[in-house]
Image (cartoon, rainbow, N blue to C red; front, side, top):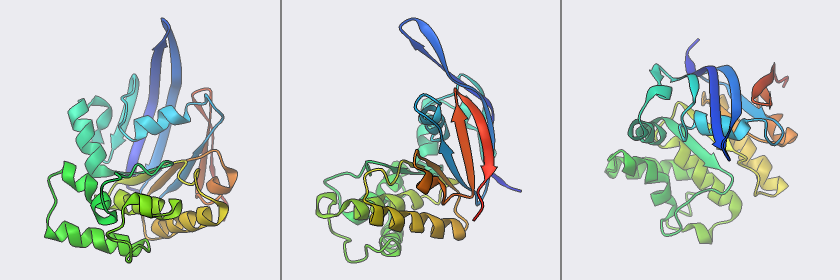
Length: 229
């Protein structure tokens, strides 16, 4: 079994008003390639902190986090920035598209950070736009797209660097129920094709699509269950 990532006894402390708050108190998880995992938990359970650590947006206080063969918990900020651009695909609730850029240009953004923009990358971005159903919107800007279409751009962007996994944060939180189903269908299709997906959500209907549900409570894994489909 090849692991997309592996967390061992991950801890994260914050200092608030002079007091140390332990947001994660020793989380250990293996995420095999091809997994589809939902992370759930009430407010204050540590799921946002775990999301930030998984996405290399923050560093743990203690413990190890291996992304493939690399222990990213020991990396510098510059190294983590490169990891985010090259190995992780992000899909956020608020889409995080750049208003001035077209659909294709937004998909291409992670490649800019790696200095990999080329005629070949332009072609690949057009193919990804077509794959998510936006082949007729290539030159549109975010303001000309619906919320669902913007999230499709974000999903295409998350795939452009062939990531170790897609990390989705409340990815359907701003969408109506019909569009939510369409986006979740897209995640299921990507997972069926072998993509590893980690989705952070508070919605049972979203988590129900995953193969596995992790529930956090007070900075610890309360349960790790396979999801029957």
